[in-house]
Image (tube, rainbow, N blue to C red; front, side, top):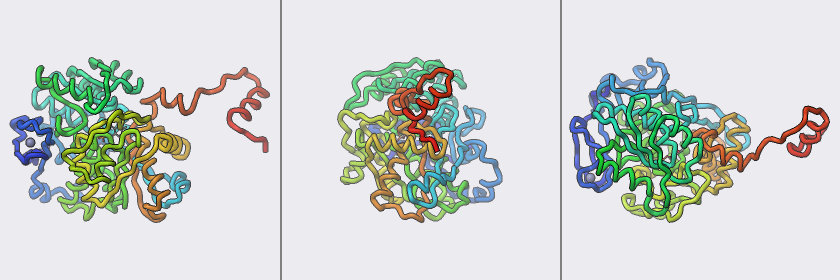
Length: 425
Ligand SMILES: Cc1ncc(COP(=O)(O)O)c(C=O)c1O
Ligand SMILES: [Zn+2]
């Protein structure tokens, strides 16, 4: 139980809040994020490397001292987190670097890292006494929310973008959410509009995966950084590559490293690199052009194979930009074709099947290596954030279908040559 939450503070106006007052959004309606501050002085008394290492890394609730809710009995968990950090030898060789690790978030209960945040958010909803939840999402966050709400016996109203992959819709429908595909993705995200209206008019608990409408969920993804620190025996990598939509994952990953730096467990933060598709790069542009982090220009008509990253406005862009500045990081804008290539590389060299959004981090690394930004000997972690089965339509578009043959060996050989380019030795 985190007895250690000290206060929350609006990232825009600085107004502070007590957790006991159940704050969710800033009363000034300034779209600030209520960042959670912990009592690091008290935590330092016992939160050592030895203390952390003593508990098995079964799931993210091992880090309960640094997570809401306050009362442990309110935790709603499906075993999220505790994902493997895989040394990617074959892929590293192909890319020409020596030390590459993949943080495989596809293994989470609903197939994406969003489970971490939604587990925390639904636990807080229970602690605050809500039973009806509303969300806006490109698909993965809503699917995760629906699973945790099912476990908690709560109702979900989910507004997803019209283009959301059917894998995600199927999950949502089966978990029992009331799902709506909302038309009109433009500068104003229509899913966010409906989530906001149902929060303001009907009092539903807002549970998207970005901070201005729910400050608790962002505490989930920060545990990725706790896990990386521990899995690399506190010897941090040079780089961590992060796919970016709303920049909440990036903000969360940064917060995790900051928590550990504050507690004296690590001395520095790895250079964080934000990756977006050139079909929707508002965050990368904001960073490169030095735009006001609180006033990032939304992208008009986002369109990318990485639908999970299609937020026209990065709601946590202010946190994300601070993350890049504080860590001395960078940002990469990659083509959709490079994302699809990265997806293929992950599957065919490392056996990890990611959706395009989940493979975008690797695409960013591939580009950075080509541009000479990463040295051969650098240690790199790439977050692989969502499972390939989420998006069967894209997979079919890229990989096609399997050939159909008769049970005949010579036909097998003919098609093998034609379709797969097989040569007799
Ligand atoms: C698979 C996947 N990866 C990465 C992201 C990006 O996370 P964020 O929106 O927090 O930047 C998303 C967001 O939906 C996602 O679904
Ligand atoms: Zn405020």
